Picture 1 (spheres, rainbow, N blue to C red):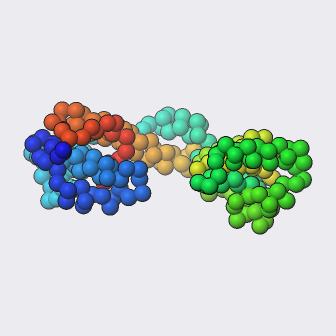
Picture 2: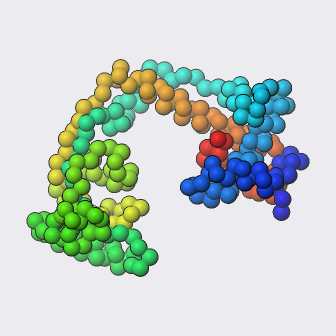
Picture 3: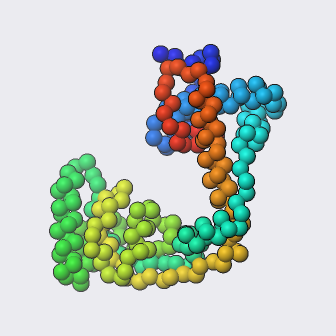
Length: 247
């Protein structure tokens, strides 16, 4: 069934041109198709309002500049954000840690992998001095050659689900398995260097930029939803506009 937007039938060529901008994301073909639809809606609305620009990107930018207007965050909003998220504005924070990775693989059933990891964790909680030996024997990470040692890690150097545990745990073996996209981990924290919280005056402009960008993103999604809601679209279910589809 063809996809039709306000009497305009999308072509395969339109989607093919958009597709490279969406590689590496889930359902890239669908995302590219949605992006073409939204660009068509924006272009049509800009023309309806009598806006002018030398190319489509300029026309869409002019439309969004006119229709998506959000205020700059005030100092109190920035200060609240700063107080609620101190870790984001701390520099020099480091954790020295070791881990044992039980990697997810198609060959090993998850239940069996978890059982083996839980058994290893129980052994280590009873005999923590065996950590390096069991890491060398059982870990699927190259760090196994160093007894599981990861060295000193700063924020942003590991995946978020690993980082959250790493920077909040007390020194010693974390008494539960940590699950990430790579597998199950046993983690031992050796040392935590607290770092320094940057002064609010140092980061106020940075915070204002982040908050303003988030507000623009939210307002843009709402505007796109409004345009889509009053358009005549057939051949596809748009669903929620939950990704930045307009490049």
